Image (cartoon, rainbow, N blue to C red):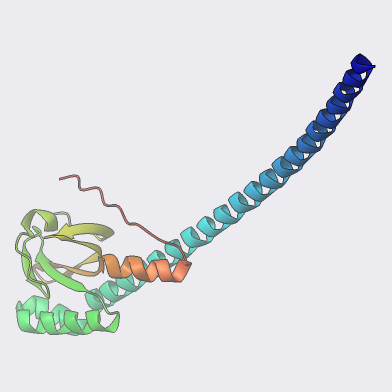
Length: 196
């Protein structure tokens, strides 16, 4: 009788263990499906947010580039500025470029000669010599001046024998990063690779 009872308990224990394993397996499978679906949904949502942020960033940068280009080209066609270049009237050139820069809230303006030598700027630039040598083509570019990075648009202004390069730009700094982060609703980090 003792042996039969022990086998019955053992059989009952086996049925209980098998039942528990089946229940746990089902729950684990259901949890796996839920986790997979949730992970996929979160991944898609993150990708969509990144795409929207990138699109917003590209739109803002393109808008800033258009503003810089339009302002610089308008300055290059401005008769008062061109006459100031012809007369080599630095005060008149500075007044006109400062006026144009204030219209678009540019952070920096530069006037340089055809060799890239700085003639005037609204910023104190300790070591701009080598950096400005790249401003001898009409272009939209990034430039490091002293310890700051700028997004610039440069145009030539020629009148008579005089050729000047006029550049207007925005500073690329923490304020821009915060503005972009606020705009896209994400944390942003700007990395700069200094190739000097």
